[in-house]
Length: 368
Image 1: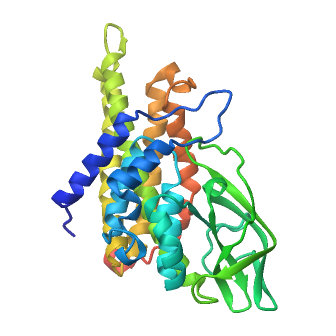
Image 2: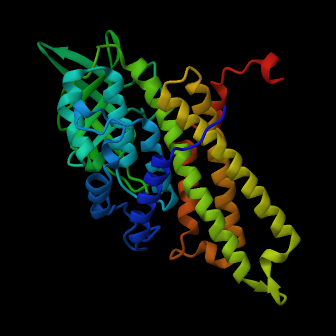
Image 3: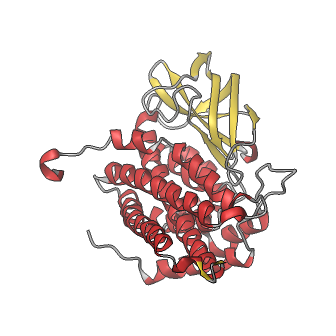
């Protein structure tokens, strides 16, 4: 498969990169207040000046009618500087869930606010005991007369604390269903990754309305799972590439025995291994982005491969960064620990590499 970004897509990348570079980063939270936070000025400029929030949203729903590929370019640039914010949770996951549901009324009501950045949505999908399942949910939905009530708990909900629209996957008699919940209880404990906000959603007879067909959530979640895997892979490529070059520059500056440490053959080998890992992961990431954006039949395979390999490549670069930075690598004021924590947390987000590899439909005759 041959693939290249268009001139317009490269210009989008440059525009987003210039905007983010002006604000600096990565942002390192204060040691005494490590709760996740995000820059609303950046959020508003991405929405208003760049139109990033509405790239993959149809024009009749308040968006710009481009493809998911453009959105994933923005995701890669956000990952490059570990930019906190609800872009992944709201613009990517929640918006894709709404579009995949086929519920025109819900899309017309909710997507314009997401596209403008005025409304933040989250997708409460994962159960604490068995996260990221597409075929079953521990959260229960029951009818009470002419209304629906939800009971249960959702974990690992991206940007739950900032969301004013909460989409919940719950099990009805007809099967897992996507709902819009009305004012559920939300908490936001501080996790390992200080650049990402993961919350919990508690539902106790919480009123809700179905989004899409009752019992139709598995089809929606299969699409969302592929999009989520491709998006996390894009984030990791952005972060891994920039961090690798930061490591290289440091190895040119730090001297031991009268020479830069980067001139030692053993360190050259380690840096070369990281470079090969990042570039091979980039190829898979772009293939997955293209596949999910175009609806390619092999999109689940590409997304699973990208999530698996990009997780491992970024973890390799993050760990080497700590080692090659020496004592700086364990200093709170330096960004090295942010990469290590982001890599470890992303390893588990939307399923570990081993889980994604387990669902690959590999054909031994083809790949042997």
